[in-house]
Amino acid sequence: MDYRQALAFLDAHTNLEGSPAPAGTGAALPTAGATEGLSLAPIRELMAALADPQHAYRVIHVTGTNGKGSTSRFAAEILAAAGLSVGLLTSPDLERINERIVWDGRPIPDEEFARVMSLLAAVVPTLEHPPGRFDLLTALALVWFADQGVDVAVVEVGLLGRFDSTNIVEADVAVLTNLGKDHTDGAEGWKAKVAWEKAGIIEPDSHVVLGTDDEVFLAAAQAEPHRELWVAGRDFALENQAMAVGGRALDVRTPGADYEQLFLGVHGAFQPDNLVTAIAAVEALLGRPLGSEVLEEALADIELPGRFEVASVDPLVILDGAHNPDGARAAKDTLDTEFARLGSWVLVFGLLNGKDPAEMLEAIGAADFDAVILTQPAWSRSVPATELAAAARSLDIAVEVVPDAVEAFGRAKAVAADDDLILVAGSLYLVGEVRPVARSVVDADDFPVDRRHNRPAGG
Image (tube, rainbow, N blue to C red):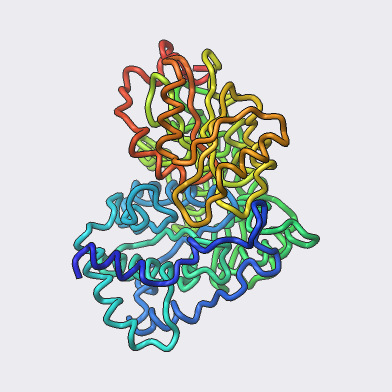
């Protein structure tokens, strides 16, 4: 296979990521059936046919309603700074599928993608249980990591955990970031059921790192056989944080050390908690403190694509997935606390289904924006922009509808002055579609410094 043929083979398989949620604009995946029909049988059979290469290295496995992608990236950067060879598997991709599969900071090359997919394609016809698209992507990553001889893989869960394809790994460290009302209808008992699904990544020999002290999540984690359990606030914590130019200065406590005045140069009110959880996860894996110099190196040039990412300036363009109510509220809080409002604010907003559009519009604070442009990602699960507009009208929010996402961003650029701010949010798929046209080179001399028009508040 060449790369084009490898992609075609992949796309010929069932894509659960692109499968619609139940009918209805605001329909959510039912709590009791969020993983109905899912099975680990296909990935187990596929990996067994390949001699289970996922056992060739240690694994940090990460799940959670929000923050699992950022936590995974933080952990991978810290491990690399500690001198280890690191594989990183995340989802979804923003611009190219290769982004999901990274070794030592570099996405898998096209020729390697094609080589490993050719190996999988030769095996698939021999299997009793046909794998899906996400099974194949997961297998490709785990095989490639073994081929590269990684010391450790950081693996982000796709959906929930227990029946996710990534749960073919055996987690040395199982990270559960937080618990929120996503992939659920919110019916009575939803929290315990979702917690049970996420806690399914815990293995009997796993060191569990729980990024919240939520009692329901804690009970679910404790119920799974495990080796050790660290809980945020009890065993590790963000002790203090202060705004600094371009980010935050953090004081962090872990079971192994106290780290003072760590500089985190990314935006997002939620990111310090993700970082603290990642530090604890790496300490749990290594069984020792890291040293401030390791963390300083890891954080020196950290980037989190699509997570409150500053894509360009004049006007200031920010890209943030904000794909559920908790994430949307965090995005609005970040705007309110980190950015001075010197010009108008423009929102470009689109959703995948499985969300309540009115709840999401309220969570992102759409009424506080000077202009709201509603759109939809070019994805099978998108909520039509016209349906979003109906929800906005019910909230007395004036909006403009531009169904094509790139055209919607172009419209936002057309109405925005240099002093204004544009936020693109609501789905990582929307962010990925807009990102290639939104990004430009951000001159370090221009941002963030005092003369920036929309510089971070406190900077």
